[in-house]
Each structure stands twice: as C-alpha cells, then as structure tokens.
Image (tube, rainbow, N blue to C red; front, side, top):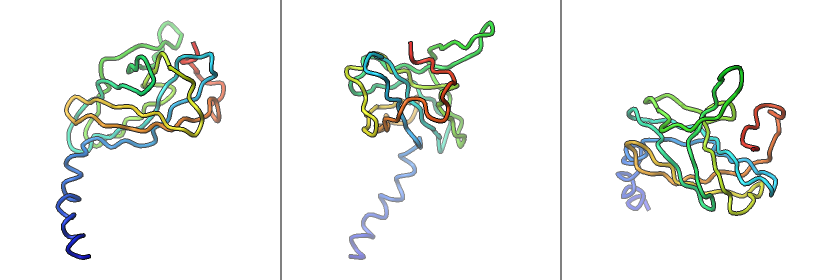
Length: 150
C-alpha cells in the first residue's frame, strides 16, 4: 500500500505546476425557457504567472463571449472584451456587476441543480474544462442589473 501511495507522490507534486489557473464557484443562471441567453460567473486565480482568460466554449451554447458591464453616459452597458487579465496570485471574480461569460443561443433551457460543461481558454495555461452549476435566477441580488435578460 505504501509503495502504491509513494508512486503517486511525484504526480501530486507536479499538479500545482500544471494547474496554473485555479477555478472556484462556477455558476450559470437558469433562465425562463423563452430566454435564449444567460451568464456564467466564477472566480479565477492565476497561481504562478500573469495570464488571461481569452475565450470559452460551452456545451449546448451557440456562442460564449467574455463581457464586461460598464457605466457609460449614466447607463450600465454590456460590452464584449478580448481578454480578462489575471495577475499572478490575484483572484478575479466574474460577477453580475462586472466581467462575466455571456452565453448566447442556448439549445435548451438549463435546469437548476444540473451542470453545464465549458472549456475555458487562457493566453498561457492549458485549456480547462469546468462544470458550471445551474442556479436559480434572482435570489439575494434580486432587482440588480439582470442585463442578460434581453
């Protein structure tokens, strides 16, 4: 038994070097069946060097873009971005009021409690497959900017 565990030790030591981007709390909003778009949220941390999220592709979604929300002429506007910069060691939260994954053209409604598989692509790190948990629309931030309803 000890030899078997010891055999895995070099692999365990190598994992942090390979996993340059840590992903936490991936969520996607369940929307009414008539709404073909939704948004994905998560927290990304580049562990060893500066990097950037440069794209994503999600199962059953026609197009997934990186977006930000910004104030322009007194109004909140959603805009696509080329990349979301990740400074080494700093957690970057993709949230409802800022950067997020805009998922357009859902092939079928997402069911609360299920997961949606997405591949995240980075400037330097290897692509990473992430399971986003489908969560109920609204909740504690009911009444805030639900820009993805259009």
